Image (cartoon, rainbow, N blue to C red):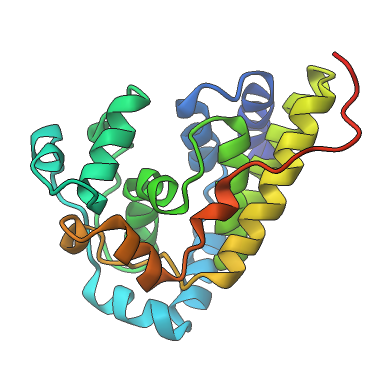
Length: 226
């Protein structure tokens, strides 16, 4: 029975390891690995965090977000930066899978799903394999649960499959920087993103204690030739 439960997550794990450029594979792996008992345990652990209690009580959601709404936000604001990010990377706000807003663990999943790209924006990590590894390290530093570690493992395995010293070191470096950023920052879960769309991005980062310079790649040592 345990093997059957693991079969689907492992299938999506190896699909992601083969081609991490497919955003849908990240969500497929998350969905297939969802264990209601574990998810509730993660939620209950998170709900004990002082910073998360307010979010659990208020349950802030993004609601309907359109390109026009984001384009109308002031220059330099969180909302404008979010819109620019989505357009630059050929993404749409409605591309993130919709999760039913309910109480408890369902709210946690819904909120994390719909704010994923906002985490990219506020941390500065790009939506490429190295940037995703860095962002997953932020999740790992701030939230309970093993899924970020599994996603990082798939991204590192991809670099090994491709026998790329460059990609391996880039992703390890991103993980180290993301972990440090996540440890230093306030909890990003439950932040009222929608309410702060018109606020300067710099102010939002300051409120959250996010040092976006940690998203910038560092010089690498000992890279083998391709």
